[in-house]
Structures are given as structure tokens and as C-alpha cells.
Length: 446
Image (tube, rainbow, N blue to C red; front, side, top):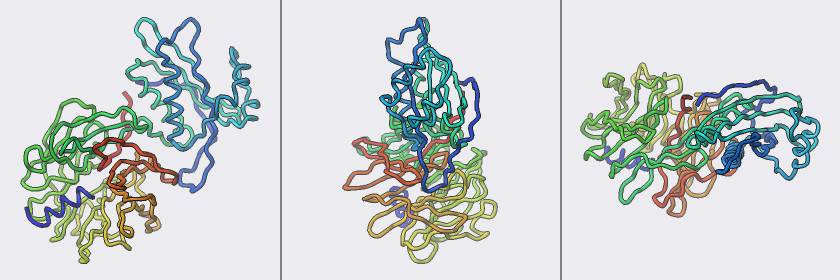
């Protein structure tokens, strides 16, 4: 391998349908506000319908999942049951809601749930209803029928509906995060739910793996694998089924993939030209070259409209990687725009789902931190301030969170932090650490 190819590798390593019952609310939260008050919500105990039993405790299990989902959204304060036990007891058996009473104890949204467990097929039937005390309105209701196997999925789905009702955007409780973790001397891909549950090992390549990336529909994860003694481009079913396909195995690097928003193109880095250049792999396996430069070009990321690609290059002549943007139709022959300044090392660009921001890794002092560039103001702001090095950002599909790798004290794990600030939440806890996180898109509802 050439010296530049080795440098590139080092850069890469561092670097169930619901029935809608009702809807309507005048409460909305402006996501870009720097400060906001959380909505105080009461999630009352799930009420088991008469003549039914729940020996497995599915109702309470579901309530805890829902409560945790809404807390993790960082949009809600869950009111403790001790605050409203007497009020709830007075409403038992009634179809009306004492809006004034709930409002007096500080509850803004009230969530009531009825459910039953079918003793024959063990199906779980649940109906959620949310009321707004200030306007005395029934906001939304959803009814689901599922089995215990899909219980978490259904609760996550309703949680996302609650966030949608409040913000105008679906929540991300039903989404998943893929990341790399060491298994022996190798790395494999793992996937986990947004809440840190349901961790699953996806690959068994028993080799070095780099930079997983989701397809736009969430069905596939594409990555670079050395399983065949060359850094090949491979994709695998995100469901864990053993369907695995090799997309590209040109000599040298087939690396740093980024799936285009239309699902028919993948931007990636190839070194077949004796230098790392960015290409676009078309649906028919044709290749369209994006860059032609004697310096290293790597880490492509698509704009949501598919018209531009941000990437990393040391073409500035200073010997340090910086972030640039090119036009997909013209490539870098049409000119590139540099957006990172003030640091000798900037890498790992990630374009936000709304298209107005790009997150990236930047050297700050002796550590690395994540910065966010605003394409409207043309300014970068430091996003992470936590100890250690924070790198490899990826956006949630609603644009409200960034997942990234934190390296501190010899330990490397995956963390999630809201764009509004606050304390980061650790997502991975494996002995093998966590690297190169990739956030799934919204999954299509079955």
C-alpha cells in the first residue's frame, strides 16, 4: 500500500399499523430554541380491562418502557404517581376527565391507557389516550394489537407518536444505532435500540470492519470488511438475517461509504487510482468520480437533497485535513467550498437530516471535540465540551440528537447528546468499547 492509503486507513479508524382515534393540539415546541420548559406529563398505571388477567405483568412492563422513552426524549417531565393517586382514584370508572383538577397539580398532558391480554393467542391489545389540561382537549388516541415479542416496538412507536404530537416531528424511540465493538482481536457491528436495550451482534466477519452506514430505508447496513484480505465494500441485512453481499472489491480501499438519500447511490472512497478519491457507486454498479486531487479525499456525507457531498481533504496545502463541500453533478472540477477553520484537524463530517447543519470532529487543544457548522450563518459552534476526545458524530433522523464516540482514560464508548445541550447519555457499555456509530433512519411501518 502507498503511504497515502495507510494514512487514509488511520483516518478512518480515528476518524404493526395503528388505528388513529383523534388528533389535534395547539401545543408545539420550537426545536431550535436554546431554552425551553419540558411538558409535565402524567403516565397513569395501565388499566387492565375487566374479566382479563395479566400474569406476565405486560401492562406495567409497557408503562415503564413508555415512561423511559419520554424521559429520554428530553421533552417531558414525568409527574410522580404520588402526586395524583387520589385524583386518579376519584376518576376510576368514569369516562370524563377532571381537567381542572389535573391542571391544579401541574399536569399539562395526561396519558391514560387500557389494555387486555388475550388468553388464547396471548395477544396484547392496548389503547392509549392523551389529554391536554390547559385546553381541556382530547389530543390523540392510538390502538395497537401485538404479541409480547413486539411489545417494545409498539410502545416505542406510540412514544414517537407522542413526540410527533408535541413537536411536529416523529420521535426516535423506534430507531436503532449501529456501532463497532471489539470481539477478540477483531471488530464486529452491533445494533441497539435508542434506549440502550435489545443489543444484538449483527456481523460475524472475524476481521477488521470499518464505518457502518444505514440504507435510507433501514433495511441494509453497508461497511468495509477485510474478510477477504482486502478492504471490500460489503452490506448486510439490518434485521440480523444472514444475507450478506459484497458490493465492490476493487484492489485497494473500498471504504467510508455513505448511502445517498434516494437509496440508489453510495458515495465512498476508492484507492484504485493510487490515491484516495471519492466516487459514487450507482445502482448499476457504475462508478462516477467526484474528486481528482493528489491529496487525500475521504469521509463523504450526502446532503439530504442528494445534490451535494461534504468530505474531508488535506488539499489546503497545510498538511491538515479540513471539511469541504462539492456539487454532485460537477464534482470538485466545479469547485469546492471549505467550511472548517480554526483547527489543524477536522474530519468525519455528518450532514443533518434537515440539511442546515454539518457536524464534524475538530481538534481542540490536545483533544478532539465535535463542532456543528450552520450553513445559514456559516459559523461553527463547539457541541461537545465533555472530558476526553469526542469524535465520529452521526445525527438522529429528527435532527435533535447526535451520537458519537467518546475516548477517555483508555476507554472508548458511544454516547448520545441532545442538540439543546444537557448531559450526554452513555449508550454502549461493552468491554470491547464502541466506535463509528451510525444512526438508523425512520423505519417504515409494517
